[in-house]
Image (tube, rainbow, N blue to C red; front, top):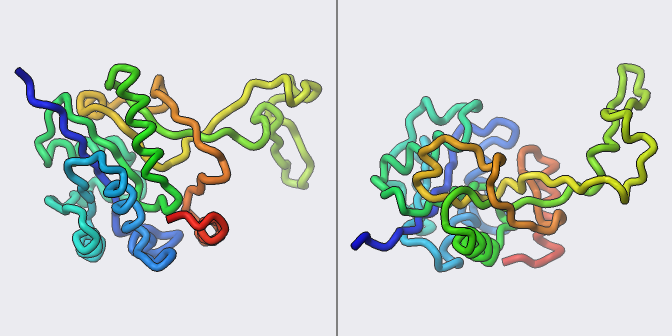
Length: 232
């Protein structure tokens, strides 16, 4: 008889962010940014362990103070600007010795608008679909991508797709973007090296609640949304 699958939250948080220095531990709404991700994982009630993967001693200390584990140090080779997410989670899975049937949820460190109920609902959607593969949140683009414009060096507009210049927007297929908050998958799927964007199960979020915090302007917008919606 096989043992029941464990559910592990893995929060990747490297120390070398450049556009917003130290953003993973910078205060946001009275707490270090990463504390919001840890808190959402805790509040969901889903996880047997909440682990932070980091190369940075300060981030590790903050993570421990807010109730996460930091059982290993992420290698420098997996902590530069170009390292994708999947290899980082694979490294954590191997360091933790997880079994193939276990579920690992990658939760990004800068997700102050993440609701614990989203983690639960997406997990349940994956379970209902058989419990294997990826599941992750997406949101709809505000405007049809088929009608996107580019600007030439003189600032004049040119369509990306001239075939849709005359198509009514209501006749165009909706398009979605990765919300950049979290990814559920079984360990076997993480180990495969597959991309969530190819066949992954999508969980729809309202676009107003999705902010990818990469620039100071993104940070300000997230703070404004926090104050307006009183998210906790």
